[in-house]
Length: 467
Image (tube, rainbow, N blue to C red):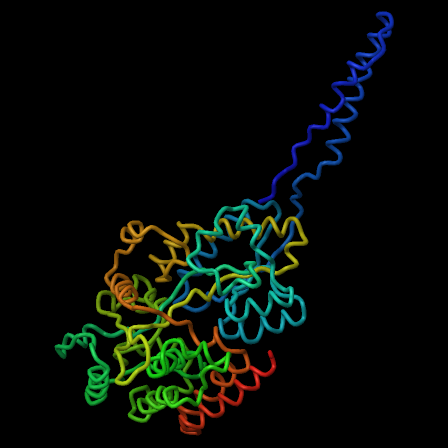
């Protein structure tokens, strides 16, 4: 926050009256009047040198990814914060720039960082993006700001945004991943959420035989099918396997990793996903489930926001459940582990630190966005898990819908977690699997074994580049 400097220079001359000569009354009178004049001049000079808070108009850009019908609650929270900051910082007008998440991360922001002209405030992916940009000096060091605001210890995990002991971004919320399922359909079959992997696969087969789509599918953007694929290879090869690719301790073509690819391909070949999924965007993914066409949807916990009044899944309120992937036979490591991270948040351009008014706006934005009130709004209104520490009793008071209660219970029952693959491997590897390999696997242009070999080749090249 901007803090005006209090000028007290007029007091500097008080002692001058005591140091005046001891002559007649006229001299004393003159002596007492001179400091008064000097005091007045000093006060005038002090006022002239103090920089008033400027109300000169200036604009800053906030790049966000809250686009589309299902992100309106999230956008409303951002707009409320923007309004508060504009009230606190004289002359400030924010320009909101909404961009698709994938486009922002992989295209726009990368290009802007390379050119040295990113927005002042922007949606930032934690690991590895924030570390790369911080190393290049593109991000504002938030450590002193968090100390000033007294909130550095309020976050549950800042590791994804930390580089060399300094903090360069803040997570807006947490998430986990698992299966959303149509409880109404399951009840009609007398089913419960599957307790074993064999039971899950039997349910998928029975749903297919019933003329329904077992699993929502939309693979035009590779990250969508990779949510489920990531969980499958982590079941077969262990929840820590992906973290070992970049160190060379594990390989993409290890047999257990390939088993995960093979299982995903098996489900594709059995017709468990909607035909033509390679041409579908993420929005279609949701529609398949909310329309009742698909019975299960593997997605992040943020998706719970659509099953609220006024949202696209309003018709399924009270009819949606959530479960973790059951243990696979012969799987390595903790078979209750699920993907869980705090990798989505906001970053700030390093250039904002060179402008006093922009820095004031950054501080106000952080103060108004990252607090308990906004974290609870994100949870209640948008299904985003808090990234800041909140007392369990407060959480219990605010979680009022059954679906979120079920999600929290599933997350709490897992013994461990792992981050998504794209926070653990280099950008070239992410591009290879997201833009080429997963679509090739789904489309039948590659095999699980060839996919593993191709990824390992890119991984070794990426590892060698940083040695």
